[in-house]
Length: 303
Ligand code: GUN
Image (cartoon, rainbow, N blue to C red):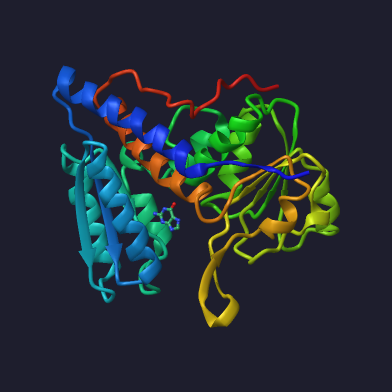
């Protein structure tokens, strides 16, 4: 059997189209143009490349893009000053501080300083708490994108066995909360989990978000399962060429899975599309308007 390849690029382009339509309507009917401020401290090459894509796609969807580059020696106080100005700026509806931050800055303090209403990353403890309590709020973009990708294969996740490998605040933990809100059965596995391959083999839908190149092998996957790969790992390939691989050994797992995301072209493009969607939702919420759902937030009927 060969798995269906889940085309994250095409699904993300479709979502960006819906975002652009919503931006057009907001600006035509309400005179509101959503604005996203992206803050990059230092010059980490991976971060520079992510930020460049975010800025390009923000402008491409008709939103305002505010680009803030700060030198790597910026102090926490200086960054807090910028966050305070962005919080107070009515043309800014979303604020994203690219992580990781240089070591002299306490990232937790910065994340906590972003106005929860503009926290389009969904990292502020207020939004993390709202997500775990099943209350409306902004949820992190990568997990939102993972759920949308899984739902292209399994439109209802209700009652399915799902396994998330990884427990980060950016992906694993919020993804587990979103899956619970979809009424899935959720296991969060991590580096200390015993019998990890056997735990993964239980999954109808397996999410890998650990940052370990090709960790998930074919015998970790139940035949026919859906596999969503969040990993972006730079490795040295044949002839010493740099190559990007996921957390899943794609070629061999594609022989057993029912559906699988490629890397690149799977979860990555969805993260940015969900960031744009969150910015529109934030702009609507700030203006007291009904928020477009973009298929993102499930109804919350838990027991
Ligand atoms: N660094 C890696 N992923 C992310 C993300 O989703 N948001 C931000 N702000 N930084 C990141």
